[in-house]
Length: 89
Image (tube, rainbow, N blue to C red; front, side):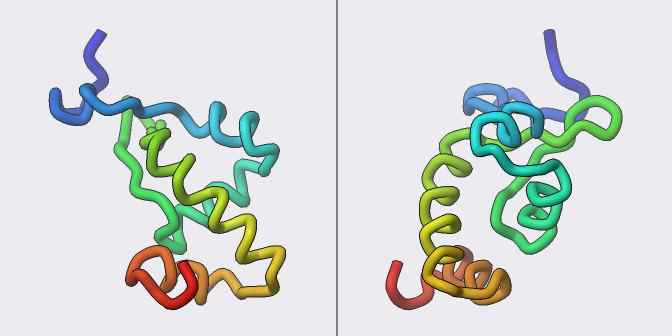
C-alpha cells in the first residue's frame, strides 16, 4: 500500500504515525506537535492530515531532548543544539 505524497525513497526508511511516538514516549499529541514545530523532528505528510516521523531520528533525539529538559535547558536552546550541533551534545 503506497502512502499518498510519500516517495519510494521515504518508504525505505521506517516512518511511523504520531500515535506510535506519543504512546512510546508517554508524551501528549500537543507536546509532539510543539516539538515538531520547534524543528526537533522532520516529518513526512501521509494521506490526509497525517504526520509520519522517522523512528530512527526520534529515537536518537528523544533521549537528548529529555536529558536537556531535566538539566533545565529551554526548548529554543534545545532546538538550536539539535539542529546546529550546539555545545555539549
